[in-house]
Each structure stands twice: as C-alpha cells, then as structure tokens.
Length: 628
Image 1 (cartoon, rainbow, N blue to C red):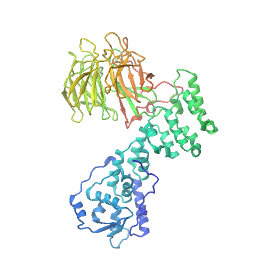
Image 2 (tube, rainbow, N blue to C red):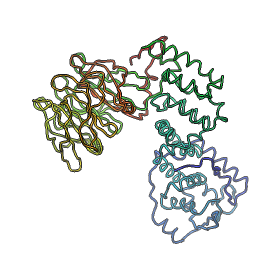
Image 3 (tube, helix red, strand yellow):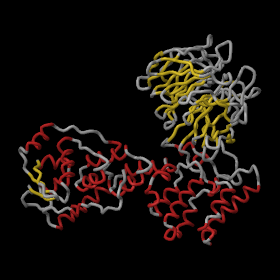
C-alpha cells in the first residue's frame, strides 16, 4: 500500500455548497480552531458503534428521505438529514442553514465528492461502520476529514495502524500528519524509529524524505539502530539519491551520527574517504571533532569512550535486558540488573518486595516478566511472581501444582510452560502450563524423561527441551512437544551430555550452549535445525566455560550472562553474532552470579528510564558505568 502524499489537500473551502462565501469562510475558521484543540482520529479509543437497523432499511428503500446529496459524478442520493447531521457537524450546519439565520433550511446540496465515497460515508452514518480497504483509504480519510465524520476517520486510522509495515510507514506517517491524525502520526513515528533498519531496505519513500524529516529521524535518541554505521549509511543513501541538490545538507546530517560508537577503522575508510567529504571543506570541518575523539580513543587500547561526551551519547535501547535473582556470594539474591545495549552498561537495582531466589524460571508475556519457582537456600517454591516494568511493581500469580527449582520455562501459544525441575525430593518429568487470562495452571502431558536443570525453547510451533539431570546421570537426550496432539517424542540426542545448559531458538535453529557434562563445565555449543533434521553440529566455542547461566536474544545476537565456571560464579557476558559466527565480549554485570535467569522486553513506553541517559550522572573524566 503506497500513499501519494503530494496530492492536493482537500479542504472544506473547496466544497461547493449553496451557502454564501462569507459563511463558508466562517465555517472554515471554526473548524480550524476545533482541530487545534483535539486530534480527531483517536485510534486507541475507537469502538464499534451499533445503529438501529431500521435506519439503513429506510435508506435502501428510499423511504422518508427529506434531503438530497448531488455528487461530483451527478448521481443524486436520498438521505435523512437528521441521521446525517447526527454524525457530521458539517452537514448539520449546512442542512439547518445555521450560518444564515432566518433563511430556509437546505434540502438539496452539492458535494464535490464521487458518489462511491459519499456512499461509504453514508454507510457509516446509517450502520455505524463502513468498509475500509487499501484501495479506498487514501481518499476516504480526506473526505471524512472534509465533512468532520469522526467515526470514519477513526475507522481509517485503525485500518492504517494495523497496516503499518516497513515499506509503507513513511507514507502513512506523512499522510497522518497532513490530515491532523495526531495519534496515528505518533504511532507512525514510533514505528519508524523501531524498524528503521528494515525501512532503509524496503521503503522506496525513504529517498524522498525532506531534509527536515530525515534530520528529525536521525537525531532521535530513540532511533533503534544496532550501530551508528547504519545512521551514516542512511544519510549517505539519501544524499547520493540527488547529490547535487542535497550536497549542502551533508555537514548538518553528519552531526546526527554519534561517532563515539563507530570504529576508527570504519571512520577512516568509509566516512573520511567518502567523496563528498573529500571534496568539501565544510564537511571536513564538521568531522574534525570526531577525528580528534576517535584518534585519542584509538591510541589508548582498552580505554572506554566517555558517554557524557555528545559524540558518544548513546541512544535509548529499543530492547531492555533484565537479569533477575541468582546465586551470588554464597546465597540467593533478589537483585535485578538491567542492560543498556546501546551504552554497553549494566545497572543494578534492589527490589525490596522480591524475595531472594535462584534456579528459577523467567519469561516474558504481554510485556510482563514472570518469575517461576526456584529455591531460596532452604525452600523449593511453586510460587509465581509477575513484574510490570512500567509501574515497577511485583504481583503474586497463581501457584503451580508442584514446587520446581532447576525448572525449564518457555512461552508457547500465549501460555507459559513449566517443565520438569526438582521439588526437593525427586527430579520430575511433569509439565504444567499457565493461562494468563484465567490466572490458572493446568497439568499436561509429562515428558518421556525426568529432567532437572535442563533447558527449553519454542521454535516452529513446537516446544523442545534438552539435557538436564535425572538424579543418576547427566543427559544428552532431547525431546519435542506438539501442543496440538499433546505428545512428546524424542529427537536426535546432543553431541555432549549437558546439565545447567541453555537452549535458545536463533535463526530457525536450536542452540544448546555450555553446561556441565558430569566432569567439567563447558564452553562448547551445538546447534540443530529441526527442518533439516540430521545431527547436532558444533558451533564456535564461547570464551568462558559456564553452567547455570542466562541466555537471551538481543540485537539479533545470542547473549550469555553469568554462570558458574567450575570454581566460581562469574559476571562475564559475551554475545554470538550469527553473521560472523564469532563471540564478542560485552560489559560484565555488577555482580558475580549463577543460577540466574534473564529475559528481554521490547518497545517499553518507559525504556528511557532503564537507559544510560536516565541513570547516568555526568561527572568530569568519569568513564565507568554509574550505579543506580
């Protein structure tokens, strides 16, 4: 769905109705004031309206009509003036001739609108709804806006909101701004920020943005880009689309790039050697502060960029990583750490209403975090707690049927599954699942094997679980659960037995990482593609051996967090890039801990509050992450 945002805007002044020009002028003035007060679209608050069926029956039969609308194509439509006036203040003013006191009421008016679109508006007036499609929305919304039929505007905005995609979001955003649809414009801008990388690849309208529109996007703290190289590539693509006319904007656009997060190698080879920069002294002057900053940083290996410097100001992450609980300094903890991937910094917080736990499960569902089961050093829990990151509050949820620590937890089909674990007496094969809308657990088909300290993941509509400990041996076996048939079946066993393993679905494959093989902690990993079957295959080894660690997907990479290396708990974090097939170091946590769990929430409305920009306290010369 493409939008022609260059078409001439429809206004009420263009409508040829039988009222004096001065009256039309007053009417326009009145509506402009109204639109400044309040956005008309309000897609969040939209609800279906039910109108009496008799209204449309009278319309279809042409009965009791007391007005006529003549359309652009000279088709006459009989209407009931009261009904049309009820949904449109504009038509009410025309029909009752409110601007010409003492004059007879109008019964026949002309509208410069095709009858097809007028009938859609009348569909709404008589039934409370009308059919909005990709083919008609671009014109239906302006016509509804022209006649102040707010219900149709809402229908159109709801439709466009559901149709937001990387290839059309720029057009919808500009369209919404053009017609004062404030809520749709706000959601459109949010979508652009969140999907910027895909927009660069898929949206033809990107190259047609104005300089002001592009600059507004690139300067945004909430622009969701994995690295600043993407920002430079974006401005480069835009400029080179019309180099002669856009060359003058390069110095301003270069200031949108946060060069402190770009490697000196890339800066020298891709930016300083870009021909428009080579040819223009003003561009070189604009880049001089970045040259000094990056040269100094490059000359001091191991030195971290000062994030308080404007050149290194981190953006607000779209995804926030939460690491909760775990075993640290000889006892379970209730600490929560959050990770800002744009700043590569961890922030520690104490949640007073959270009891210490380790060997628990953690997952996200509907932008809430669920903490399931676990162990506090003496008791094994069947309890469930739910954290709302927007209100920063924890709440109790229904308890499981069985206590479970070393539990495997996975979200599948909108439900939470708790698999196996240890109840203080035995390792379990039982499985139960949680319905969040009912706040209720139910038992389901048990696994084929008892598994404690295993790990589970959902992929391709099925649940997989691997490894674990059954009380006698460390397992290499793996099983898959089909929720439709409620049957478990074995798949190919892993190459190595693994307890305290982490299983994660990544790029259509299952990755089983680390763990304990019965003799030592492992830094090895292996992957399995369920679509292709076959054997598990080894993947690049991690830097650190670890078991009972946390694993998440963040920035399209696998992050492994903390764990036990065989002699001590560790704070170390590393990430695996599926493009390079390599592991990279990330900033360590503030605490050494194992038996923790972690999860990621995306698109939080209060993401800024978890970011470096909210938590950092500027200090001269400080280049260490401040504590919250």
